[in-house]
Length: 95
Image (cartoon, rainbow, N blue to C red; front, top):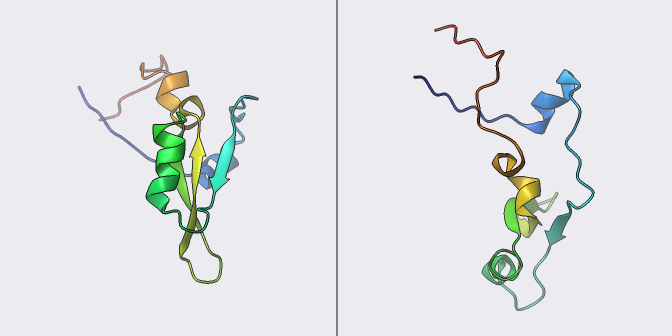
């Protein structure tokens, strides 16, 4: 048995012209901490008490500093929840 894990970016998928998964219930939340609030506080609000998952950081365009966090519902951020890990019938192992 062989296993290989490959991570791809959205920009690598675009040229393939594949249909995009779309779920009207999915929402991407970009949150910036209020004064006196830490990123840990922001994470706790969304991930611990509200069943969201952290998916990315928001960066300032001028300095590159982290200015916020991006969250989504698990079913919108984790392909394993809505997809399958079963080997497709057309998979050919060349090695």
